[in-house]
Every structure is written in C-alpha cells, then in structure tokens.
Length: 347
Ligand SMILES: Cc1cc2nc3c(=O)[nH]c(=O)nc-3n(C[C@H](O)[C@H](O)[C@H](O)COP(=O)(O)OP(=O)(O)OC[C@H]3O[C@@H](n4cnc5c(N)ncnc54)[C@H](O)[C@@H]3O)c2cc1C
Image 1 (cartoon, rainbow, N blue to C red):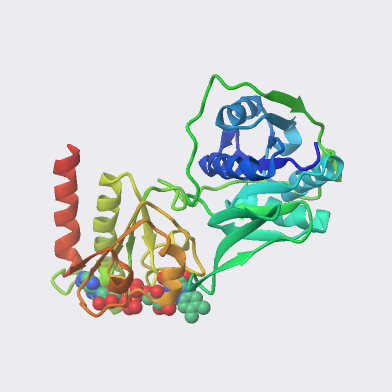
Image 2 (tube, rainbow, N blue to C red):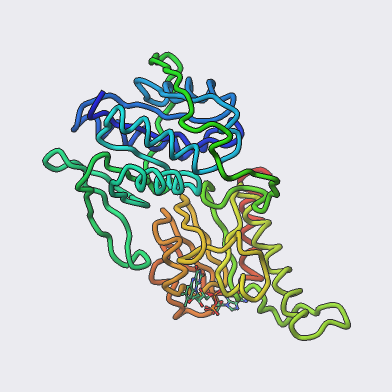
C-alpha cells in the first residue's frame, strides 16, 4: 500500500544482522505519526525463517525473496529488487540499518529510485508529515537535522542508536513471496571467495569496546627479546599492550578497537580502527587505553553511552569526553581492571 514504512532486514548466510531489528522500533514510532503498515523486506537464500522473525519484531507484512541469486551479498540484485518493489508499491519511508551491506543497498536503491538518502541517523521525528532525521556531521561535532524532499525517504539508522524491540512470537503477519528482479545472467558480479577478517566479536555490534592507542607500545619496563631492531621492539611492546586490552575485552564479552596511530604503526590490523576513517561504534561502554582523544578518533566513538579513559597524561583531550577518567599507566590499570571484573563476574 502506498505510504507504508518499509524496513530492510540485512541478512547474511541466513542470519539477520541484529541492527535490523532496531529499525523496527524506529518504524513503530514513525507509524504512530504517519500511519500505514510496517513492511519488512527480506532478500536471501533460504530465509523464510528470517521473514517470520521480522513479524515477531513488528512487521505487519513481509515481502521476501528466497532465491539462490541472493546467496552472496551483491548490491545489484538486492538494489534492483528493492527499486522494483518501491516503484510498484510507493512506500513513504525505507529504513535500513547502517551496516556495510545496508549502506550499499540503500545507496544503490536511492540512485535507482532517484530519491534522496539520509545516512547514519541517530534520531527521527515527524513534522508536518515529513520525517526529520538527526545525524552527526563534521566528525560528530555538530548534529544536523535533515529531511528528504522526495519519496521514498531512504534513511539508514546508526547501529545501536535505536532500542531493539523484544520479539513477540505470538504476533502474526502476512508473508508475501516476491520474485527477484534480475536473473543470474543479468548480474555482473560473481563472488569467488570469502576470507574472514574480523574474527571474534564484531566491533560495530559489540556492547563493550576496549580500544588501544599509541600508548600500548609505551612500556619501558618491558624488555623485548634480543635481536629486535627499534621498530620490531616497539611492535613487540604494543602486542603486549594489546594482549592486555584483549583480555579486558574478553572478560567483558567485548570487542577490541584501536586508534589510527596504533593501526598505522602496525600494532593491529585496520579492521579494528575506530574513527573518522575507521568504524563508528556506539557501545554501552567504551574504554580507551592510551588514546589521546584526537577529533578524528572521537568521530567514531563519541556517541558511546559510557566512556572510560585510561591515560598517563591528565591533560589528554579524551578526558573532556570521558564519564570516568583514570590517570595512570595502562600497563598497571588494565590488568588490575581485568582482574577486578573477572572476580566480580565470576569468570
Ligand atoms: C584525515 C585523518 C583521518 C583520521 N582518522 C582517524 C581515525 O579514524 N581514527 C583515529 O583514531 N585517528 C584518526 N586520525 C589520526 C588522529 O588525528 C590521531 O593522530 C590519532 O587518533 C592518535 O592516536 P593515539 O591517540 O593512539 O596516539 P597519540 O595521540 O600519540 O596518543 C597516545 C596517548 O597515549 C598516552 N599514553 C602513552 N603511554 C601510555 C601509557 N603507558 N599508559 C597510559 N597512557 C599512555 C599518551 O599520554 C597519549 O595521550 C586521522 C587523522 C587524519 C588527518
């Protein structure tokens, strides 16, 4: 029906990204103001179970395409079907989680539909029948409010910025199967291989992130093995620092993040980088260890709910943002914290 609110459920290999469910609580709030139905979109291979789950999270109807052409995430078939359905059914709003795949599908869908896109949104409201989206700009220094002058209004929601609703398995809704817009012959991209780069807990989904910066290499008390040159000794020290950071993250079931200085110096792979040119995270708890708090780092973590900073320098800028600041050497503080949490959590 025209004027509905659509929610794109991002799934990979038959598993929905949890941020997709957060979008249903945003959709519910919009529905209270705009009316219409909440329609879930689930495209994939063997994904009928996810379509049913979407109903539990709040979809009134689900349009699902279950086809091998969706087994790999390739933006063309996903965006083509999204655009085809949107042209036919004229939704008012399409919400996406700001996952890597969600971002790509939203961007390509917006191009195909010749409509605007509001990315990485942290709050939504409705004024005079139009959705007003709040999003951080200029590395999170300002919050802008923007609207999309054309329909459908395509909006991607920052992960962990909207509450995930409790699933209600008693809810019922209509599941409508749709056919892909492209056949395999019409899809140019072929996926030939995958290799896992993230490992462990995904940084953007984690409720707790413990990050290390250049300070992780700064422990003159540690003596590296004989025969290393200065650079190798620095990296060896940093690995000892990041080992402590990882142990703290493990105890808290969290993920390990890093500053760009740590990544550029070769202490840890880029996948862990938080910031303007890395990942944006919004955990409940962010612990920054030996990170000064440059604006480009803050851009990736300033919306964390509670920020704890551990730094030797009492004037480090990170302390201005942190709820709790610990002035001291991370090589003393981090293991002590890990031990305390281990005891407290019985691990
Ligand atoms: C275009 C651009 C994009 C960028 N993108 C990013 C980005 O995405 N993410 C990002 O992080 N940066 C980014 N940067 C880099 C950013 O400007 C900073 O250089 C970087 O964040 C600094 O990292 P750091 O805090 O680890 O290092 P530093 O600034 O060197 O700080 C190290 C901190 O560790 C403390 N310390 C040292 N030893 C110890 C110890 N033993 N115990 C406790 N504390 C200790 C020091 O007091 C200091 O505060 C970008 C820069 C540019 C120009």
